[in-house]
Length: 351
Image (cartoon, rainbow, N blue to C red; front, side, top):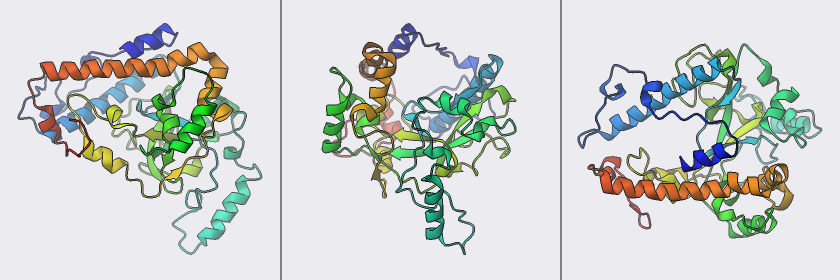
């Protein structure tokens, strides 16, 4: 709430749903009931399934509410995920463009064909230098995915960024970042640069025009609906080259990853997600410092004070609020959450 209050004071329109009965939908299973009681005997699986059920019902009610309010393009992403412009990366390879089902096709030739297609600026992904916002892309008409009422849901490829740091890279960015007072260590999107290769299809996240939402049941945050006619993409996997946008998912620091109280993931999952075998340094989102970073452009657009309050100041508030929540959980919880979470503790990790 301290972060929400800050954004509200800056003019952002935020509606907070605190009461589950606003969006909750009872199911047949015990953990799908609103009056479900958490006890020491509750299995970790039931708590995790309950969390997922709550998420799905929230998404469905949220989409319907925004539809009723007359809204349109809406993203269903987490707070550690960010929409990025899908600039062409010369290292991404052929598989995001070529049809893998055509086994007889020469994949290297297909890659050369794609590169020769995009470099002369014949593809939308090579024409985004003057684009400043997602709304600009939608309005410009450059990506016709946003103008198909028969398929108003677009799955964007989501690429994982590991917690690996490069001091040289961080220092280079820090020297070029906008103005005094900004500390690069607070910004995951500038601090961490190692991501999965764009060559492979990834689990998607959706951007959907809620004006065309008709109450379909949400089955997964990665697929949204069972009906393949509603969303682009095959099942839940998305080829990166198909869209003008992509999603960056930052694992972040251990301190920001872990959750006080019930955590369906834990230290073992944190380490697992950080094992990106083909991780490369992202060079498509302004990591060179100076005016290339999104933060520098944001400061230029809204001014230093507003940019500071909406970014670093909000991050500091969130960190302070997290500490208070963790203290409260330790003092008031009558449940051994560490045992329920079944965390596999690793040397160097705090409990």
